[in-house]
Length: 259
View 1 (cartoon, rainbow, N blue to C red):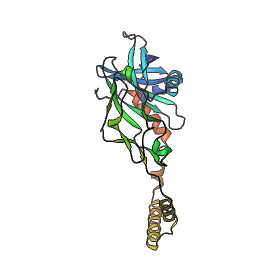
View 2 (view 1 turned 30 degrees about the vertical axis):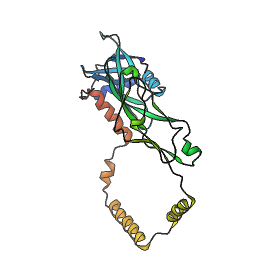
View 3 (view 1 turned 90 degrees about the horizontal axis):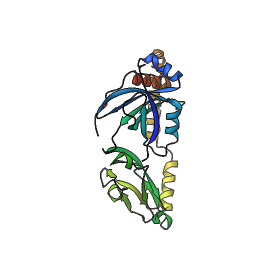
View 4 (view 1 turned 90 degrees about the vertical axis):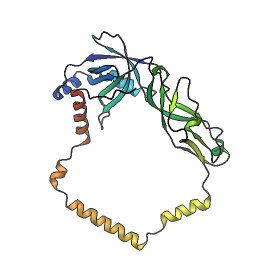
């Protein structure tokens, strides 16, 4: 995976009420941490980081971080966590995990399929994509954008498991090798489809109707018993997200020092 350049600045404003000032300057609070360094508060340009995130072809983003005034000219890091506003999707806070070019990292990558399964094309089967992501371990430069699986030869009743995947050079797939990734299920017969449709359209039995009625009555009683004060105390999701980002920006959280 190719790394991209990103400029960062040391952050001295860490109190919660200072976060709004950082936003007003067109920057976003961030933190960088790693196995061999202490967490450091940073700021990054909001437009630059949003452009990188929104235009990235991969779920993993590797950056060459240039921190103003830092003795290390370039610091290689993975974008580990991004906090976004739940409504506007505006980025509120970014976590960077510093990595080494010579040390392997563990990341999650998507699984993509190519080709048309023979079981679908000639057997009328249904392709079921069971596992959509998988953990891999490799050097930062070898992180794949996705793991691609060719399903062309997959027939009805057959499956591809994690152990069947041949990863790219330098990449190790982590996980139970018996887990199914994709499979071709047998087609549903007309009789089975008709039976399923009839079952869905069948009227409810008297005891089922009574149970539903009782449940609705119970829910009505619970709703009627709610205190107005309890509802007034509920916080909108947007406010909660902003406070969470402000809290994260106040000081870097303790991170587990794992590979």
